Amino acid sequence: MSRTRGAPLRRDGGAVLLRSGAGSNTNSFQTSRIPDQNVVVHGELIEVEPWEVDRWCRNHLGSGIDEELFRYGHLSAVIGIRLISGPQVVVKVRRTSGRLVACADAHHALFERGFPCPEPLVDLEPFGEGEGVASAEKMIVGGDPFPNSERSPEPFAEALAHLVALAPKSEELDTLDPAPPWTSPSDGTDLWPWPDDRDIDLNEVNGPAWIDESGRAARDRLQAHGGPPIIGHGDWYTANLRWAGSGLLAAFDWDSVIAAPESVIVGLAAAVYPATYAGTEASIDETQDFLDAYMSARARGFSDDELEEAWAAGLWNRSFDAKKQFSTEGRVESLTESESLERQRRAGLGRV
Image (tube, rainbow, N blue to C red):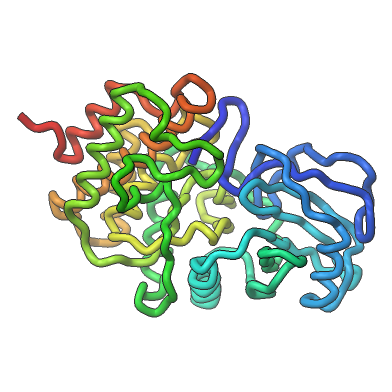
């Protein structure tokens, strides 16, 4: 996930152009941050017509829009709505993708099994005249981006362990391919997969050499080994979580469900869980503490191979973000060369 200094950023996040029209109570752009309502995101503008959302709500929720409470989005448009009938809901509009069916099924299963997440109200349904689909969920209001213990990894790791314990088996779901690029390298000959939130071929950008070497080392390690896939969340960090005291109030962004070895799912989270903007990701010690807390919550230790794979997964995530940052902003915030070398060492790479 690429993060911009000074602003929280989600892959599906950003202020959306809000136009006046049916179901809209404003005639201006809404770009201010509306906290604590299913999303906390910021980024580029996309457009979704209010009358289209109103029509979709009438068709699938049985009521038109009384008021739009917020709009955000980048890869998707996330729209908070108060219906004429009273309930407050969140409608998410995005381009159709085969993996979204399995993501929705995983979300449903976890909600039904008691995991703290928004209640799904409408499954994927066509939106507009193109290739769009939309879904709706109950709005959750409140909560904080961090638990009482702030950056301490234990609550984040324990909540992820709870999710993994309740998740359906991967064979019970349809395909979750292709995995989001920040979670897994591609199978092709190019090192860097195409970013989902940038229109740029990272492989055409020269350097820095240490980032390319970091990404290549992580890719080779992840492709060389791997346990059986399980279901987990591929974007487990502050922008997708809300806390009430020390307990998880809700986890969001269920389009980021992935099927991967448990060590990969944990390693991705351990590398980024406390991030609020680029440069605030987990330190080496915080990553280690996250792994330890997760293994304790799961009441099982990882093998040496699994631990190395977890470090490699986090290294891939951070290297991918670093490459995107250099390619689009000319600077790197999410990884340093010295930290990359230490993460490589812990992943069993670069041995003499």
